[in-house]
Length: 229
Image (tube, rainbow, N blue to C red; front, top):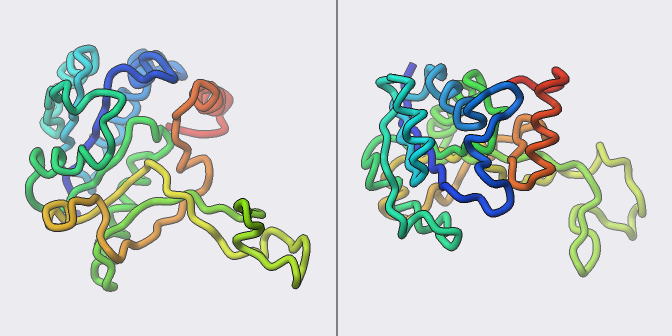
């Protein structure tokens, strides 16, 4: 299977969920980083995994795996603060990987399995053949979406409360995966191009752990057998 290389940023010091990336999670002693590295190692469509972190605890744990797929990088503190933006990391990812096709993913998406990554990578190659230049994952929303000016995805002058299944799908970008050639990183300073393929996911698969309640919900879903990692 044709492979892509993975950029996995993992910053120490989450302000919302302390030790979020490595605190015990649903029976996994090393938490979300253990789950994610296992998934990426098992994914046939993923070549090298470039783990960029300033967290010594995570570096120590990843080093114990003895996987030839994992490339460890101790990230400088200038790129590790709470003020560091995603934009700041684009050139960092390019510096680490440099060529080929880059899969950018996150530890905080625990329900994106090895099989999920293989499906995403396979769809990426097809999307390139179809004329797209990149891929990004989204969580599909079927609901009544408003802004301060009123409805966005339906017309109340036609029907005030249409059935939600008849509403056009909207897409919320999640943290599961972004795929693009290194040339886009180099030329556009971005992790997607001008014509990305939108890869829709359900709410569970695309869940991102950002707040304490997200961590608790995700852990409960695993322990109750509602979701698998």
